[in-house]
Length: 341
Image (cartoon, rainbow, N blue to C red):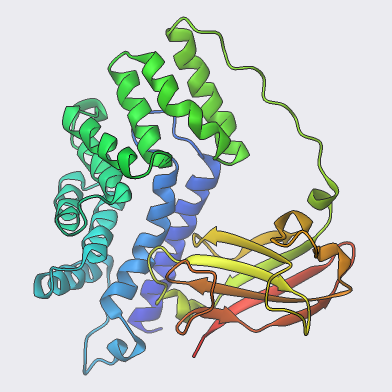
């Protein structure tokens, strides 16, 4: 087993543990970080390798020795940033790595370097707050961090992690009504499991503020689109996993065979872990005039975009297009194993 393969297996194991943490704890109940922070952590280790190694040519020992440990990967990343410091994503990646390792002060230094290059990035501002909180007694969010969160929300008023941290800051300052104001808008945009945990925190804050609890969340009856569809298992080739761009986006697309390029159903997801199982149904259709359930045969493809753009581009990671017969209980598997020319 080569050092590179051994390192990949080790990192894959760590990513699996982090993935379980994310699934089981969608909203952390203490003052550490929101559950979304683990989503970033899922990308840090593989992203570090991508940034350090760059292309397969970099694996050539004559050009650059592949890192044998995570410490080696970090050292190579720091060396590359020393040579070319004008790379905000590189500094961000380094900060995310230190966050994963619990090194708040080092993470803070890296995020501040990134913010010198992109000072109004709401994600970076929020990540800096997280790093600062790691180094304070009781993980308190101080006045400087609150100002950073206010800056982040000026750029993106619905930035989920910024709102979560701001609510925590208000709870720490014994301002429960302000925490309620920060958190309640999130209920309309987070997933159902996260919303349930968030409602619990909001109701605790409302009680402390002398307010009535939120009304019970309505239970929505499943629609026909929820009950039917095509179940798709999407996997990523491990070799491409080593080159996965940080912040990449996964698209799983269904089209009419020999028809227009517009999808009849599509899901857009952040890249977190593989394999992933999703269901495409009528509720995922962008065109009201054409539904997935109306097709006898469907073409399926999965694509990872570094830019997050739905339009296919050179360099995207993609699967082979697969044609399936539509109907009840249809299942399919897609392997992302090639790079678009």
